[in-house]
Length: 104
Image (tube, rainbow, N blue to C red; front, top):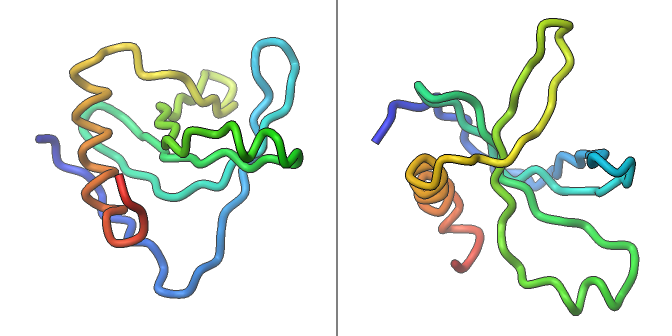
């Protein structure tokens, strides 16, 4: 397991809301639950926030885990983790860190 910077969740609930625009120009709103930094990079665990009641009912409740990437211009992007082993490793770290708050 990789070393990571420990950014504990605050005792006081104060959600960070993140707006992400996908490749089709569609905006998606997420609550950022946690973030970590490992030797392989920076990663975030997000939970979708829906405006429509039907979308809430259709949600499977899974965390969305993405890699945080910064380009040469300093722009920050969120990208899927392509490497399955890395994804599983990062997913386990988030599950361990968030176990007191969520049931997986």
